[in-house]
Image (cartoon, rainbow, N blue to C red; front, side, top):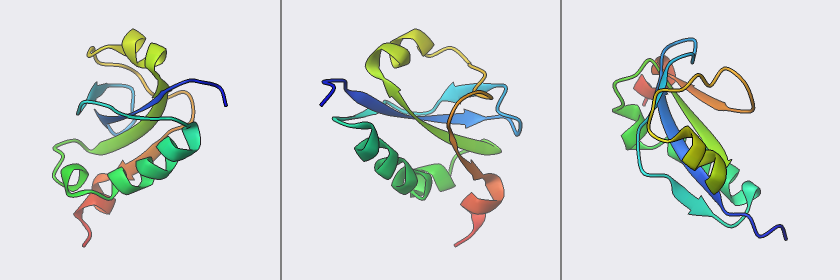
Length: 92
């Protein structure tokens, strides 16, 4: 066990994910696997379905990474991310 705490952060983004804003207070998990499992559930939540962004991205980050990102807009076009398009969020 690595001892790292992972934070699941949701970002509201432009279609190309070059401009993203944090949408919520990140939830923490004791492993990356637990965080990634929660990410799938969060992307299907009512909170995400109601989001006023063309794309919502979930990202599991270490607490240090989350602190470095802060609350400023970021470009998330690099790295492993999960996408929820506006079309996906409007189904159901």
